[in-house]
Length: 226
Image (cartoon, rainbow, N blue to C red):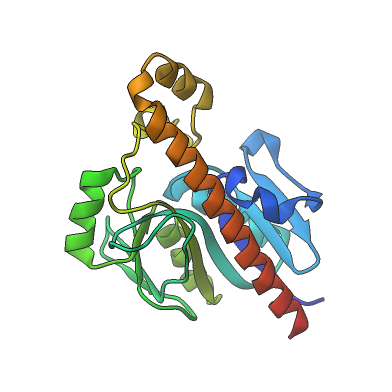
């Protein structure tokens, strides 16, 4: 049997368009969502490095992997990258450790940080790393791929531009990497001044997720045709 592509995302919303109709092998007690189809296994377990590690190990335990993909939303770190752009960086750098991981193909750089980066933090990261985008999981996934000698790729869709006005997000992230949507909605409901930013964020995230899933679908078709 041909080894699968292991696709690691943070949140189910990022890959919902890809896994629609796939077999659901999720692990509810561990809060790990797991979906499988002939050529791929998709796992997501929440935001951040620790949850990405759990998702990656769950995917590899389920099936041998030919490649490991870290996928999902990312924030732009350079002007001109708009919401919906799909990037495949050539390298990933862990901001916490300085480690650099090489992807099997791509161009540019992705930097992984520990928390959601707001506008000011993105500008600092842009000047410090000269990277194209920022996420919270890719370096953790890349580290496991390197340890196990499995080719690694990152496929990220821009959900917020460098100058995007983001509403407060970090305070609504749980310790185990999930977003408290109800608490966030209640917070926003009482602050009409934040509504335009939230609506833009929702539209941009949906646009990015659609483009990401389309790109991943094409990659899986190419893999199956090899």
